[in-house]
Length: 171
Image 1: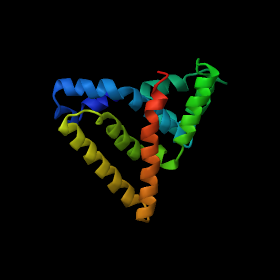
Image 2 (image 1 turned 60 degrees about the vertical axis):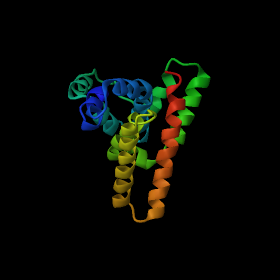
Image 3 (image 1 turned 135 degrees about the vertical axis):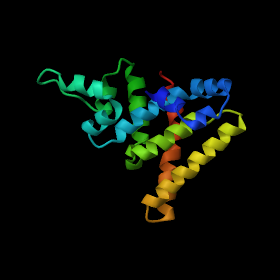
Image 4 (image 1 turned 90 degrees about the vertical axis):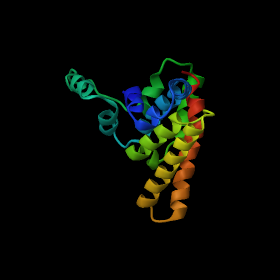
């Protein structure tokens, strides 16, 4: 679903095929971790499931036997089949990306585009990245009461974006 979303936009179409392949190959692991960060920052399991699962997934989940409950990503991280040190590190990195703004779906979409459209030397990729930073700043400005709040939110977002490569390493 993530790839279908990313490849359906005009921004991706504006790039040549080798550049598309290059940025997707380099940045998909971080994009997948960003999905986990979103779930980690959502308030409830229901909100997380409604966002992450397709209608078919939700239908299958609702058909589960009595007593089988869903869990948030926070709980799942405790049971992933990684050595304890890796699990603790991953959990601590998630905690470092804990901020209410990182549970906002609009912010998530803009961050997703920032993650994908970065790191390539193609000037079109850089231009697209700058456009998404502008959109993000504009979105935060509309929902915030002051420029200092916007800067604080942007700081949390930048910190998270810088943490994603570390999170993606075990995968």
